[in-house]
Image (cartoon, rainbow, N blue to C red; front, side, top):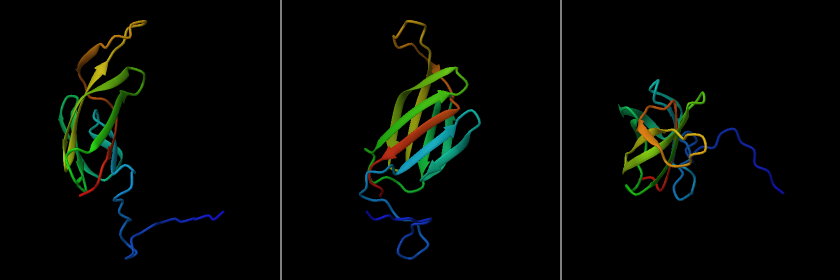
Length: 132
């Protein structure tokens, strides 16, 4: 069996990063702390706009080829205060806007008890589709 080891993979010119086009890898991802308005980690994300409580927009460095790309999200308040639940996602070629709310479940009650919109300190999103 062959083994490939590399520290860096670059485009043919030797300096640019390799472009993912028709592969099924995430084309953008983000770990964002809305309480501190800070990006913890990201790929293909130029900035984040804190729109209002519980609402933020992830702006892509390289746009998606169409608005109908796929965005997965999860949010939580670390430290044990509970998970968030995505209320909606609005998609554009150059961004995705996410709204989340604090979810509180009483002991033994599995009904959906959505609270008000709330900033979370761990918002993780990934975007899948083709780049423009």
